[in-house]
Image (cartoon, rainbow, N blue to C red):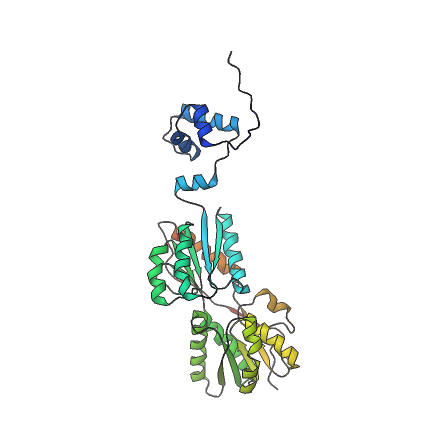
Length: 338
């Protein structure tokens, strides 16, 4: 009668070499069994599985990923991790990816358009696919980059159907927001413009340009600003000089920075000036006053970005751009012009 080997607590982690030695097979055979390859003789496979169970071997996920050529990890390149709008999109993306068994690695470009291509390539080298969130690089650089980092999906930039894309309709969104202010009787409206390199700003500016043509009785004044809380805070002197009774901020972050400055200056909102934002980040509902804005269901959009990226990793990619129209959320920061 053959004595059964006593299982003891190992003093080091069991490796694939240990399994191969005890089972009397090669490391390659053990690897094929671990990875579910069906070409291994079933009797040998059963022997290997028995040794794995006996020794308590847990395959290294890194090693397994290398053998399969897939890491079950995807990358996301953001232009500015400090922007709460991207937090919501990333949350939806990450939740959807996790449901499919994928992990997400995030890289921040710190609003450096020139650094984005190299960061994206480095991210792709370490992951199975990448999502580019609102990349700031030029269109020429973006189109050159796409085949080098495929599978790839792009959020808030068009790709010429060279990759999947998910977009927010900022053109229609800014028209809805401006018409809301016009319906309240505002005829001098300032726009705190965002970064000139951002598609989100291009589309807003295009909408306002068309609105100026369609509504000659309404004056819409561009005020160079930016995208941060500080930019909104610092914009007050230039905004005050316009004499506007209402202002549309490039995004909610800028609007909240402006609200803070107006509070310090003793300027009542919306009593003296109405303020509106864009994106509906969580803070906007809880500002004082609560912020009128355009809501884009950002977490839901994040889930759709994952859907498109997942399709890019198959033989059936979704190349038709997916466009989402934001909705107006009217709150306490806007009211009829006096």
